[in-house]
Image 1 (cartoon, rainbow over the protein chains, first blue to last red):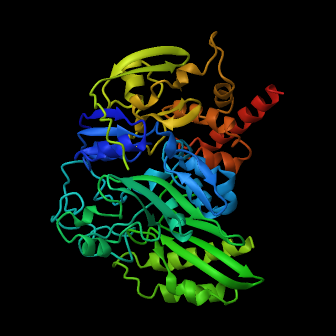
Image 2 (cartoon, one colour):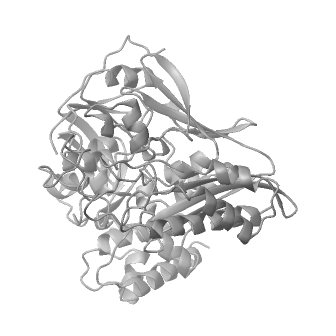
Image 3 (cartoon, chains in turn yellow, red):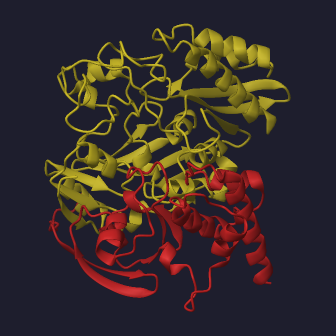
Length: 338
Length: 171
């Protein structure tokens, strides 16, 4: 890890001012940044520590929204009664992420900014194989190499990686907004659209750095808080499918939120995780499910139809079926509480 | 709008004051130094181990202000003003073992011992958090500590017994 200058920000203004200088990284939990610096994914000249910024802390309920500060750790979020009560999918996603000791450090602000677990990407400098995210223009070793865990939606020939965050999938299904601040002020971004697939990133920035762009946070912007709308009578759930029962990244995951009248679905929302470089909502299935009976057959047909445009790679078609089944399970779990 | 009155001073050496196992330690550190490296190389406490150095194995687990954390993913500058407990700080002043250490011995909860310092600290926190309730819960909340000898059944039993015993003792 290369040496860097270090300073502690006392407030958001100081942090944002510091971030305007090129080569400045922000640290909160540090669980991603330290590994990036070790591998050479990023090599900042200076690091601004926002861990002491009080206004980024806390989890509150304002009557309509849960307001979750960026510095809330994943254990803070999963253990919070208000989150458990009003956003069960988010509590569950946080609880199933990483390990107990990592969740004491990892913040909900930083978590959604984690980068892919693609093994071709997560390698030490000098990178011994093509990776467009590490060396723009070098190619994608995974496309014609190992890609069993990679994307089935939204990928391009330039990159087939997936976004591994669990909380991001829950935030997307819950229609959460993320508040961000930069030199030009504050704005909100829907977590439905916060992350970018490779195809979307190429449209936004078709230059050599386009594949570095994985979300809509601009350079120099900082995540302040999430606002999660609370709808009475709606229940949510999160299903994570992985190779071991705990402390492992998802092969696929699914988050669902549901409102029903008896055994009839009034409204449903569903998002898939680890199938693309972004949480993948299924609007076609959501529309088809309104007014339908809450049965496994109906759910399987609707989700299956919505996944017909999936584009699996030669060795990961299993993920489409697995994602469909995870989505059905998440919808049934959300419905079981009603 | 962001306040531009203040410009932060970025330093390449930082003074920290940290309470380690009950003793106040003052040090001047490079910002890139991890808590794990500092404990091992500067303080001389080699109980916390450097296994994977990327947050995958848990053998560097220590307590920071009572919460368990991976020492390899924590900068020592982030611990300024805090209290750190390592495995060397678990036993009593007279050398009597901590109830969790005693329970690991009793249940034969290790083979090679490399992961044990991290397992012990994680177990102390797991019990304090209230997660030592049943086998499945202990396995879930101890999953961040890998044991390649696979002493998991014994570790789980040791954590459950220590948790029950400590609850008994506190009555």
